Amino acid sequence: MSLGAVLVDLKFSRDAVKSALDGAFAGREVVDLGDEANQGRDLSGIPYAVLWKPDPFLLERAKDLKVIFSGGAGVDHILSNYDLPDIPIVRFVDRSLTDRMSEWVVLQCLAHLRRLPDYIRQQRSAVWYDIEPQPEARDVTVGIMGLGVLGLDSLRKLKVMGFNVIGWSRGKKHIEDVDTYDAASLEAFLGKTDILVGLLPLTSETKGLYNARLFSRLRQGGALGKPVFINAGRGGSQVEADLAKALSSGILGGASLDVFEREPLGTDSPLWAFDTVIITPHAAASSDVQALFRHAENQIARFERSESLEHVVDRKAGY
Ligand code: NDP
Ligand code: OXD
Image 1 (cartoon, rainbow, N blue to C red):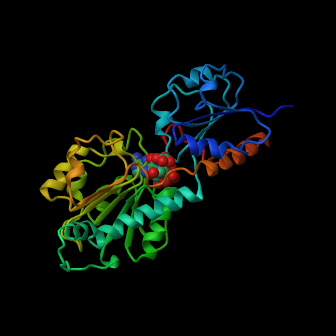
Image 2 (image 1 turned 60 degrees about the vertical axis):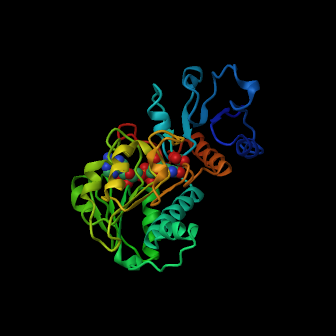
Image 3 (image 1 turned 135 degrees about the horizontal axis):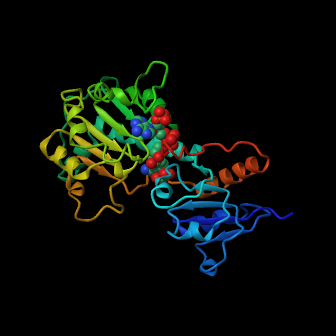
């Protein structure tokens, strides 16, 4: 009996996909839609698909799918764009992706704590000036919105650096030595937060959540003087016009942004011009394509042994 084929449509670097496919999915036919030769192909009969921002009509053509694997941790790229069949969608959960995200989050929190944007500006003008005061991590409360795989790992690593960390999630979490808040306690959470870290999925509930009202509820006058906004979840959760206003008016003291309402961020965005804003191009935690294929192989093996799939998206919650 031949093993079920795998459809691959990943809008990642072509070289990364091609090299990761070498030796992946042993014994199975792989239909890589990045390969010109597969463009008009009949996709019926294929049970598995590994997708990142797939072509709009793909799911109409691949009618026999049994499981979809997201090429990343987020699934809004699939859920928001397609009339999806009622089959499991599996998120990508992976050590390397998680480590990369925590590295990015810790880096950004430390950059704002240690005034890196100010020192880089001084360096450009050959200014030697020791900025005071110099709060320590323990003087600063980082509030993480989203206590999932990525939020929890970032929380743990920020605590190792000495930050006081609190967390907010849809359902209440119990984490030793950490104050946690559920959806209903947002105001209380914001009022204690000096650095806000967004690690939420994009859903109908989180769309536009980081707006003027939310920024105005963050703690003013903490150890950093003004609150800082850091977002690596999804850009659709932030209202960029409100963010630019909050930065100009001094409601926010700075920001680090990896995700944007529209990507790539337009050259006309006012966000580029702020000295206190650090921008990265949705690069906080890119998927390692080899690890992605290993994860899909493991989950396919579980599925074919009639074991339950891991990291399945709750379609109703949207993540
Ligand atoms: P998880 O699904 O593991 O965690 C999501 C968290 O968000 C959970 O704690 C969940 O609450 C919380 N949440 C969801 N909706 C709400 C809501 N309405 N109100 C309050 N809390 C909510 O996701 P991950 O941690 O793996 O990933 C998070 C997001 O990070 C991804 O969806 C993706 O958008 C983004 N991402 C960005 C990357 C980048 O490079 N910039 C790379 C990878 C991911 P509860 O625990 O109660 O369910
Ligand atoms: C993801 C991403 O969701 O890279 O994995 O944004």
